[in-house]
Image (cartoon, rainbow, N blue to C red; front, side, top):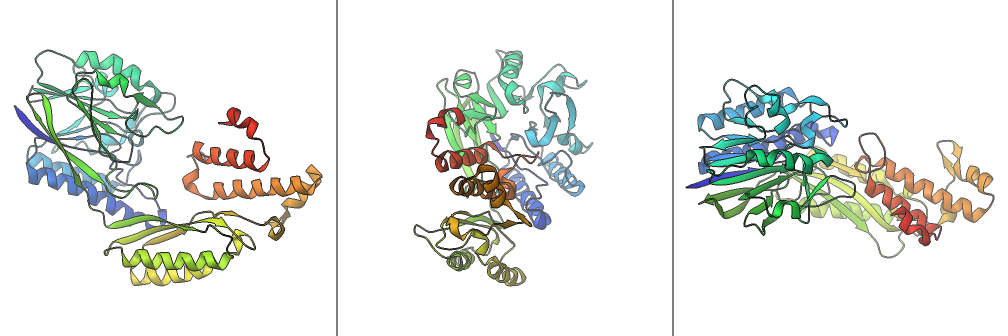
Length: 434
């Protein structure tokens, strides 16, 4: 028996960042979702698997919920099942593991019989699926096992529910995961993950992975199966790579015979413009270079709406980062916005080395450096402490560096620690602070 299905995920519908262009961003994520659904219908695939984070938040815009229902009705009319698992953005459980509801429940509708929301815990308490916790069958020959987001408990749930799903008369097994896979996808420090080694010998023909927003080429496993991560369907933030994809997978005789990636077009070009100098430059140079780079990107944008971030890096020959004439940039940006050439631009806190003698010591009416000098007693110590103060303040100004609670993310905190170690010559503490 041969079947073809589409694998995609991390669609993050109702993503509203940057807030000032929220409607544009929402439309872009909707457009990516619609594109894949239309391709599924056009290719007449047998079914679709979605690897979590259908929505970007537990309470998505009602208009986006209605949009998803409309797309699922289209699938229903063509008889294409839509199997989806719960991502961390979809909700479901709080940090204490308490069941709190899930945004995917919002798209249930009498006219949407093709929606198959798979989650072992939800299924266990459901009257409809308590006998099939964590799996569904396609034509009694393909068993699709789905694991929602369970953070650090993922391996425990895999050991608990996978054995219940196995039986001898199934042609092929497919596993849907929403977690980082160490040895295959990214594995950010401190984030939950599953080792690739723990998936290698499982009897799955295809393991569909979500959660990592970057595309990863399919990988053949030792046990004969295949693992693949399609990444997000639209750029979730500025720092993701260009190019978004979905997979068309063909199974025959219980084995994967082809996995083909296909591009998902975007109406936006989301890009970080790095303005960097290897030699000390005056503040005006950085502003001029930023404007030149913006115009270069506009010329090569191929008609896409631009969402840009400027990042300065290098060393100032005089003054401080606050002396960079950002007003010159913003005036030009306003003209570009009105002409329709630019949708959004912001400036990341500069990562610039400065001459300490050029520092102006007033910050919001307080003489911060003077206070540090009174506490530390020596000019050199006060200068170093004041530099760390400025560096930390700039980190906190960028939302990309912050957790939902307003604290520094691990990567930003490591950068701050590294700066302190370098400035104070504390390299012998590096191991304790890593």
